[in-house]
Length: 287
Image (cartoon, rainbow, N blue to C red; front, side, top):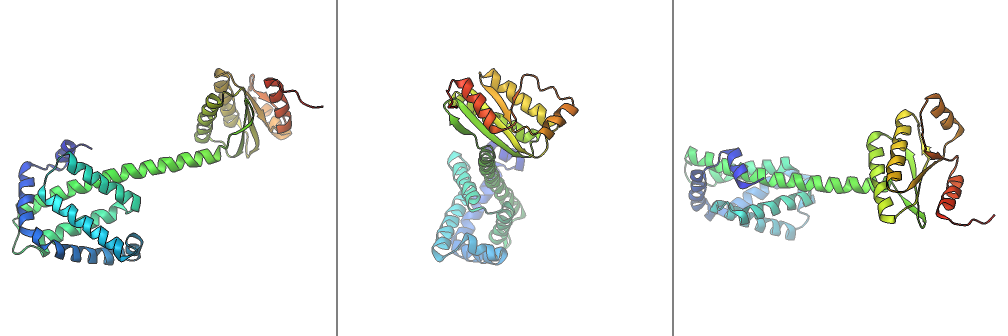
């Protein structure tokens, strides 16, 4: 999200930033009081989670120093590229610490209350409070936006790792790859498997790919169609696919459903699939 987009979204003007600077001159002298009140609030509101995020005195001291620096920068109201980058780093840190956005936004709301009410000598002009709140919420949105992106990246990496774990493609021989499929094969998983399959075919320059479905719970029309698409996709890359593990009941189900398997090569077990694969790559087998 760009600065122009943020300012447009929250309606923040140059006059708002001027008011924030003026407020800062009046209150930054009480930054130590703010830190004391703010971290007392965090300890009370977070409860047991406070110890998770701040396990020792050294961690608390570092966090307080960062908070002090962040608020002094905030009251400068210098919204330029350097400031945006500093707030993006804060969002990344919150994501790494797994601080939930609701806690961050609640803490930001408490900070606004402290600066504009409890720590200000006298009554703050309502226009100044509105400008301060608008600017603080704009900063909060920036931090949460970065947090959300970073969290999504982590989830994506974890999902990819899970996909890799669920599709353990093994190189059995030079030019021969094998993947045992276990469980339920739905459209989403079939797409993930095909993507991994084609990536490995290209990377390993595979000639034969064995799909062992002896562990697939149910073989119906959808599963058969997924297997046929995988076979055709691999063939386009010059790789033959052998589907192994077809039990008599599975074969009967395919026939009863009237599924056209086309040129898909099948075997009843993995041993027969390996024999066919070795023949395809020209490996002589002992009798």
